[in-house]
Length: 142
Length: 130
Image (cartoon, rainbow over all chains, first blue to last red):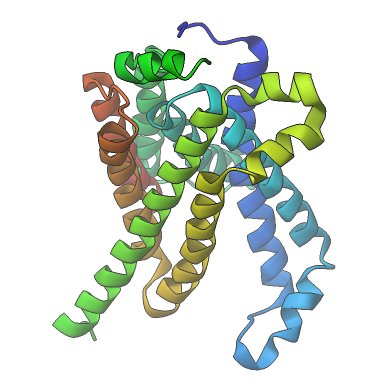
């Protein structure tokens, strides 16, 4: 129940932040190339699986799921949650500095709020104490 | 045109998607907590061992099922509601619901700092997706 995270655990949290947002961006870019899928054109879904953007998006989302579950194995859900929200900040900053899109004042305010939220939670313990659960665990011989 | 019935339908769909997401995330979080540190499991029995340990957890399988249903419910919701309304509304509801569910079911110590973080994330997500 220590408050300190190992370097590898920080790497997992950064992976949680980046893989979801970049994966979603790649998927939406790939699906825009494939075109609208509806009930009469389900074959397009098969075609989408060969689009390089869709493939890399799926790979990143699998990576997200793996790192998210690893993080949950040693940290609280309410600790990891703000990290996933940080993905919105990553997308907004990517679109600003990579795609040179304009960010409105309200978007900058949103970025600031999410960064603050991550700061609040990161200052506290990653897993909170559970006296009852710990006793149950030791009772079960773990 | 927005009539009370379509508004009700939209918000029911949004609430349903958020509820499935919360149920899924809490089940998966409970599964991972029960399993213990995945990094250590991987050191002991390799990546296949870690994947096997995760897939053998009934809590994880139920959580994954909820996440899959959540995905299709999301597709349905996006077909009847605007993305600019549905995406931030679902994200905000999911964050608040997760914090409440984590406190009640996972017995996490959600202190003032974490409640404040949830509030900031909700407002931040709404602002950023405008």
